Length: 158
Image 1 (spheres, one colour):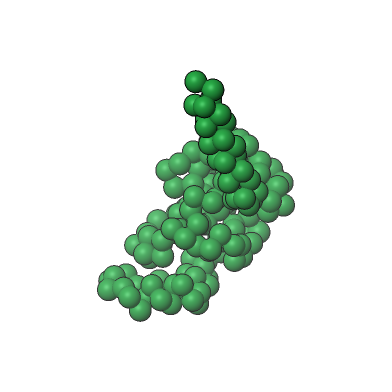
Image 2 (cartoon, one colour):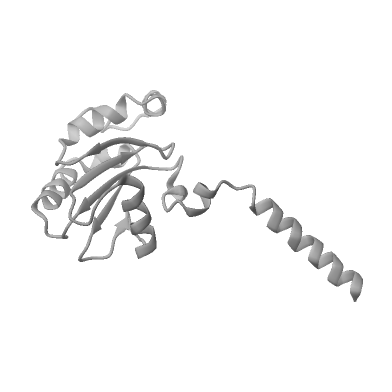
């Protein structure tokens, strides 16, 4: 019995020690699960019916194939509705962490492009043209590789 208890304690200690080697940012980053899988367009608006948010969502809907082809997910953050990235709801803790990380106040409008590497590629305070976003993505080395390996019919610029 004592041997089993001792083995369990050693096992749990080994797990705890190994977890301490994970970088803190990886443990607390609400975007970590998207890294190397998706590019993110995070849109922060004071309210869900903000005209800039509405305009941006309409612009995306007109180029949905190109949006999807670039492995983009839309994140919408507004004070009066649940925040989400793609189909996943975020906790209020995650939203607060993102606002803090990117320096966005609750009454700010911002569009942030996050690359597949998890790094911020642009931070805009106005509604961008989708062509501008797509050109920036298409200039990225990882995207260049995707283009060369793809046969998708909507690869042309919008």
